[in-house]
Structures are given as structure tokens and as C-alpha cells.
Image (cartoon, rainbow, N blue to C red; front, side):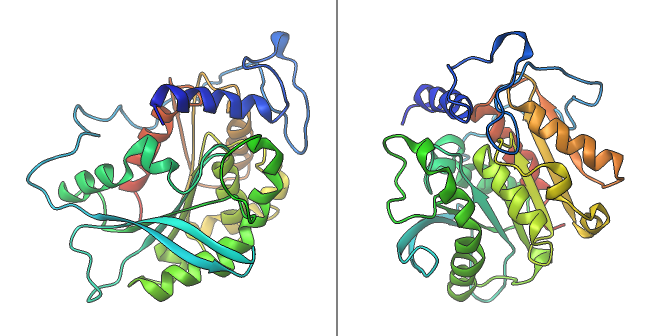
Length: 302
């Protein structure tokens, strides 16, 4: 899929939460559809600024003369869904069963599938470059299909299947993670297990990660969508989140869904929960998510 098509799908994604046209409503009106509103008039605060500089020139170009990792489409039997499913798995350069690796579980948006991250961000290229330059720890990256239903393809009206993204919590915990830890040489503890995602997947990452702190020590939401639980439900005990190694929130300042992440940031700040809040000049688009992964992956498992 071409990048222009992906960006169009991203716009459609955020508007479809409220079944509105592909632009924010006028006058700051919000239409509530579930726990959070969809499009909102963008109101920035003093906190809404970049935590990191823009990536350097050539950051996302494939480098010659370095070792490269491997991408594999992996099938597994999902007890949760009752069918055979697929996930995309990156293993770092020099992967060997003689050592054990930390794992990042990376979730896509409502219009994507297990191939979305690779299409929009060339995950293998980013990590190969960072690992070669000593900026990232060698890690396994698992990109599953977060649409936990038998027909899990992103076709037709993808917005009719939002419930399947909630069901994915059980598929992730009961099927995906056990499969990865049985087939790959992993460090199978919370300190070496991270969960992140974009848009709908960002909401999933915050919901599932903060709801299962005994399973994940690194949690990130990139441009998190309205499926993100209300902050008071997301963290009923804010003090418990202090056990995280890293809690990350990021969004573009031209994203009509930034209010979701702003609200979570404000709640965390008010309750003294350490976290990163990284706001760029991007919209709800591939460029935002790609640079977020670039910065986030450098801070994992250290």
C-alpha cells in the first residue's frame, strides 16, 4: 500500500470512531462515542512539546555494511479466537539460541494488520540501524494482528470490528506471548517485555499494559485512540505505575485525537507518575508513528 493511501486511511480511522467526515468538527464540538470523545478542536498547552530532537539525516535509510535482522510471518493456534492466526516477527542481527532476548510487542491501528508496522516504518531497517550504531539493545519485535476474530483481515468496514480489538487482550496474554516464549530464545519476565502501539493499538497498549503491570515493565501509546480507557479506569492506583521502567505517551500537535493523550498525561502528572510526553508537529500519520518508534526503541531494556 502506498504511503498516501496509508495517510488517507489514518484520517478515516480517527473520524470513523464517531462516524464523522474526514475533518475535525467546527467550534470544538465533540461527539461522545464510548468512554472518550473522537475528534476535538486542538488546544495545546505548555507541556505539549517535543521531548527529543528530530531524527538525524539518514535515520530511516537501509545501511550497507552492517548486519541485518530477519522478518518472519509466523502462524500460531489461538485458543482465544479458535483459529490459526499470523504475526510478523523481527529477530535482530546475529540472533542465536545461545543467548536470550527482550521482546517488544508492537500493535497496529484499526485499519492495519500484522504487516502494518513493516509497511509504514520498515521496522527491520530502523532496528538494524540502531543496533549497529549501539543505540538500541538487540531485541525481538512481535507485530501481531490485534483484531481478535476469525475473519481478521482489514477489509470492508474495518470500524465494525472494534470489539475484536478488546478481545485481543486475551489472545495477546494467553496465545501470542506463550507462543513467542516457546519458539524463541526470550527473557520471559516483565522487565524484558514491552508493549506499544499506534492509534487503536496505542489504546490497546495502554489498556492492556497498565492493566497487567505484572506482565509488562515498558508501555507506550503512540497517538492513542478513543478506545483508551478513561484515565481514572486506566490507572485506578496511580502509585502502582511507578514500578514501570518506562511509560511513554506521544502524539502530533496536528492530530485531532491529541486530547486523548493530553488527558492521560495530565492525569499521570497530577498523580506524580513518571512518564515521557513527546509531542511533535505531525498529524495522525505514519511519519509520527515512525519517529515515535525510533525514539522509544532506543530507551527500551536499558
